[in-house]
Length: 324
Image (cartoon, rainbow, N blue to C red; front, side, top):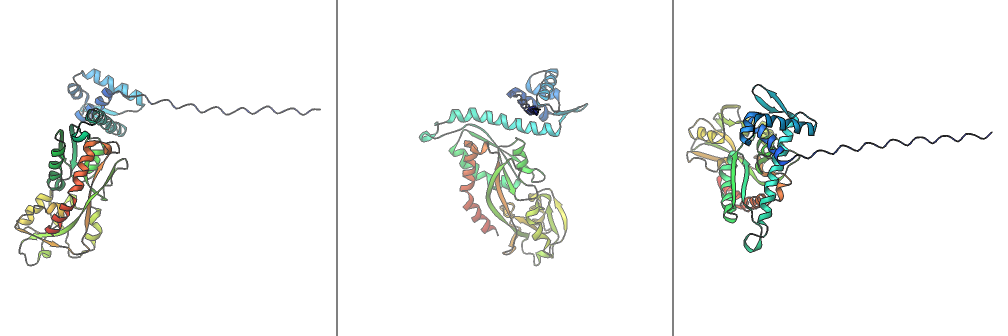
């Protein structure tokens, strides 16, 4: 008897092709940004010149395309879900790149000597002392070389997401940030260190024993770049006076209310009624740098600002040395 030939095993079914992600039109991206920015459908409709019902219908269509709820609706408006916040951040960044595409295409070879030029906004987020003392000379040089660039600076507290969060959320093209702190740079951003600024002791001028004074501090100053050093100093008391920002700290110190430990940028315009004392070779420092998105890092305006910031570095360091 001939053995039966075994039936061939069925071939495994091919895995279904993933459904293509539907494209969102620029107007749909503007819809997401408007609803998030205005906090509701009615206000967003006014901002975009349409009706509330059309706005609501558009958002439902976007949610169907993406397969996820983007906004929580309520009596007081609409707020993004976690997925919605991510979608809005991407929408802002895509819309910014569309604007950049047009501006940079028009500017190819239009500069002096056939170089590239660009016109339009450059959105910068910076913490207070960087906005006051680091950015102005860089922006002066930038606008002299590229007069059609229109820079705007938003001062952002370096607490929580800070300036890097503004860039990640698409609200800024570049952020001047404190790097290596307790608020790490989001992984989707890129950046580099511009300078290392030392900390110094600032106190009322002529005080015989400044280390005996109460400590004046502010929330942005308490981060990982000084924490280990701070904990090892038995002469530093707990803060007895807390201020809103480094400018208020300097004002309180100059009025004789205490001493403070502050980074060099914050001490750039210290009042004459204060005195700055070096904390020695083991003094803490903090890294100040820039952060941007990979796509914006290649744009003319962002690259030009980074060049000007780097060109200022020797002068910044000289000023820091003289300050301490």
